[in-house]
Image 1: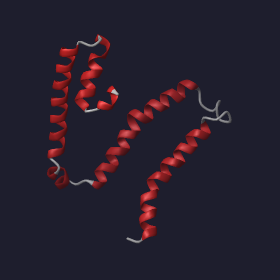
Image 2 (image 1 turned 60 degrees about the vertical axis):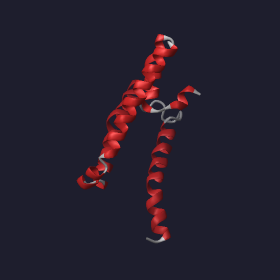
Image 3 (image 1 turned 30 degrees about the vertical axis):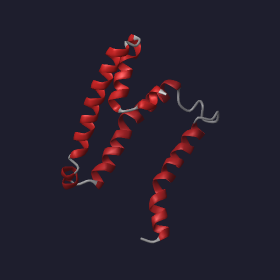
Length: 121
């Protein structure tokens, strides 16, 4: 694959995101402020993040992954499952030992379960 073809293939998703972002930024200006009502914008935002984003991800995933690939990657979901179980157990131990505020117990266990230690910095 030549340099220009590789550059084209690599930059296509970035250009798509930038174009959609520019359109969204332009629609957020005062020129288009009255185009959509605030309630409609809020509903549209929820629809995009709850429905369209996962659909696009799974559609792209389905094109590039075969059943043989999924079988050969069996260790990934197992590893993620073990990480969540062990992290959740360690988070539960930390909650029992440190006795934090009731409001943050769930957050503490969830952060330990997902391995997101940067939340505690």
